Amino acid sequence: MKLRTPEQNVDEIDMTPMIDVVFQLIIFFMVASSFVEQAKVYKVSVPKAETPQTISTEEAYKVAVTADGNVAPSDARKPEDKFERLEELVERLKIYRQEQETKQKEAVVVIEGDKDAKYQRIIQVWNAVKNAGIRQVSFQVEPGASDEAAK
Image (cartoon, rainbow, N blue to C red; front, side, top):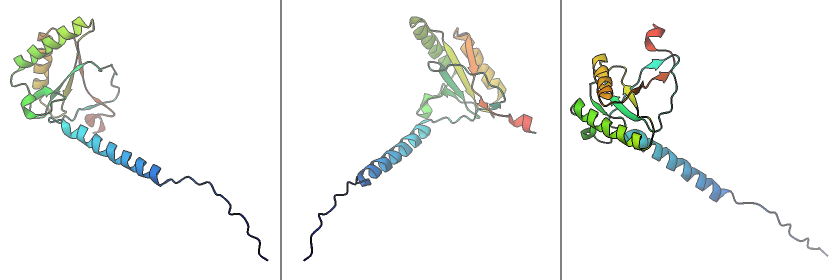
């Protein structure tokens, strides 16, 4: 006579739902990160510097100067956001400076000048920042050897 052996209970965790969730999170972050890059209208390729100084730019006002001479806030979302005249930039920077003064913080402007932008245009933007009464001005660069040093 055959004796029945009790079935052994094997405790297993079904991994399929967890794998599905992880793949959906990966897809979400891939799609979301691509929207962040596409949101900027004015693309600026900043030059490289061997030993850039790092400063905190969390509340800094960032101005982009493109290769073709357009000046706009670096987070501009549409082409109409550019400054048609530098006087518009000066007025916007004065408002920014007053906002920072009410918070008792120093106004900081970071100029993101494209490496192919004309030097004259970047100096014009720098002068506009100075005319707005802001003394703390920095230039955005990427760490690494400059293109000229490689030659």
